[in-house]
Image (cartoon, rainbow, N blue to C red):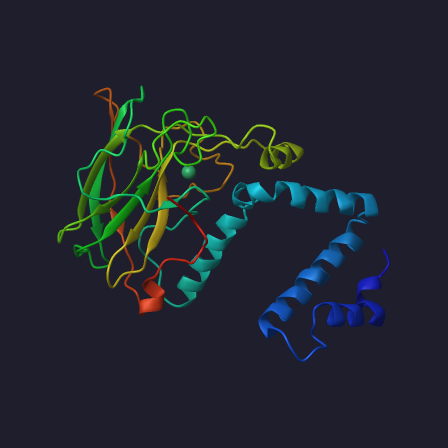
Length: 295
Ligand SMILES: [Fe+2]
């Protein structure tokens, strides 16, 4: 293998290409860009990537861009962001609370704000009824007052409202924001979601199959919890009795987030308590500014 990357020619090219040798621009962006370019060049050298292969990748990125929201979890990067935040929290002495896990690309802002106890499914669905209840507590087991619990999940066919390729479903079917009381207790019912797969033949599917992996998720329910004085929690529960509970293409399954529903009465019931971490500042409490769909 050559050591082209270390040569003065390439190092000077990196300084110029990333703007390091220019006065203007964004210093943080320049530093990150230089490392990104250098890492890409290192890959080209290490794997002797041909010119044809390289342009295949660029074409894939161009045409696959609409599926980046699925590709990112499918290659483990969204889970890595969680691990990175966990590690930073641990270093700052902020461990504890319900584990965070990936938000995924299917949240829709603007869901109706309703009282706890609501039914989330707006239309006929042949699946079993799911009831989820529990409490939102702080680090000392205290009730968290005035929390808002965002809930969203797929229907019994594995499709999310707003993103349903069949064009069915009301805008906020299986999506609500529950306004919780002073005791922080919550309860909702809906129709049991099914796990889903990435769109067949799409960019994510192509990349999954090229790595000999599947593109399926177990059945799951997403949550975002915001409460004054506490950190916003992004998480989800995966059903512990789903065959894919520990084989999720998106790596969203985590220990502590795998409740098994009680199906003894035909419907499915889950009791699940959330533990929030106190916010150190207003900025620490807030939502990520990830761009999201809205309706
Ligand atoms: Fe999901």
